[in-house]
Length: 182
Ligand code: HQG
Figure 1 (spheres, protein in one colour):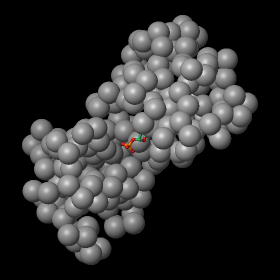
Figure 2 (figure 1 turned 60 degrees about the vertical axis):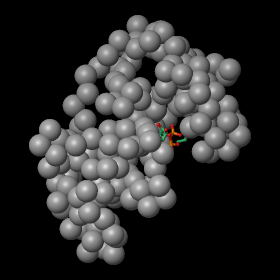
Figure 3 (figure 1 turned 90 degrees about the vertical axis):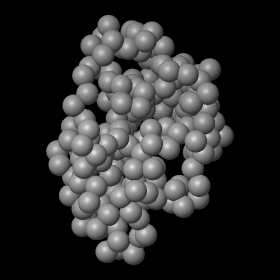
């Protein structure tokens, strides 16, 4: 379901505090990235954000990309991926598909082919199964370009791959020799 503008605002806020800066509202995450929903609401309200437990649950359910998940008892929430703070998502290393994709902007290509794909400010490099997602991700940064990753070869070379609960492939880095511009 498409999110309304108030929901988008809350979703961006949740991404910020659950992936990057919980301390900005006095929130604590545990080592697996979980925060109590009640604490999120209290900290948000104390920081002037209009938010309720119901609105958080609605966003978790409606989010097109399933960015967040709730614990079974619905008392805790965490982001499924995209963290810049160190959290252990408890993901298992998986056999990657032969090919994965990464969308970026043309202005980054020179540096990417020098240093490989680096996680930059996040914990992992984010990859997708399909080109459409990669194009959409690339557009966020400028003129999009899609890189094909020889993830099968990387797997053989013992690079580890993980898949977040919402289907994003994650790895630590991708050296340039595994990259091809499409
Ligand atoms: C680039 C969204 C120069 C990299 C999306 C990217 C994704 C380099 C940018 C998720 C580089 C980092 C993550 C190098 C990598 N030199 N530039 N050596 N290595 N880069 O936003 O993958 O909507 O941290 O290509 O859907 O764009 O937030 O990563 O352009 O899954 O849920 O540095 O964010 O999800 O940018 O996006 P980001 P990303 P959400």
